[in-house]
Amino acid sequence: MSTPETSAERRVLRPATLDLGDVALRPWGRALDVPGGTVPALVAAAADPEIARWNPLRIADPAGAEAYLDRCDTGWAEGSAAAFAITDALDGALHGNAFLGWSNQSDGIATVGYWLLPTARGRGIATRAVTAVTRWAVATADARRIELWHAVGNEASCRVADRGGFRHEGTTRASYRYGGDYVDEHLHARLATDPDAG
Image (cartoon, rainbow, N blue to C red; front, top):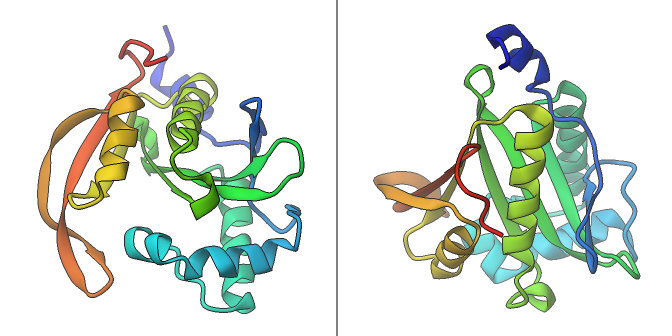
């Protein structure tokens, strides 16, 4: 059994590539290269209406994309945040993003999030990516609780949470601002001790 000191030392998120067969989760950052260029791919992703509606990806131009990549590099360097580009295993094309960051590092609580480009939706990629990132954080960084929050109106994310083994724990009122308004959110969570969801 680990001591609090050992757990605290382990709770660092280190860069890794997660191979899911047809897709790979690769660390976002300045070193990442995707076909057509990483910066243009991020700008295009941020312009997608569904991503803009449900995710806090606020990138309007190349400078914003470069700042995002710098924040990803900082998160990895500090071990506090893990941002993964979901890419095609064959050609490296960008499919989306999976993110995990500590909300309470000393207590082993993290939050997971994701977005997908239109061409990758409806294929189970989000569920597989969230499951892989969750398992990785439990196995390598001693995460004990992973939370998944989404707007109540985002039914696709509710399905991802359910299929990924994240139990619904309740609804928080006016808890996050999507666009201009605060909206209610569902909170789902997985514990390191929960049965494996698949």
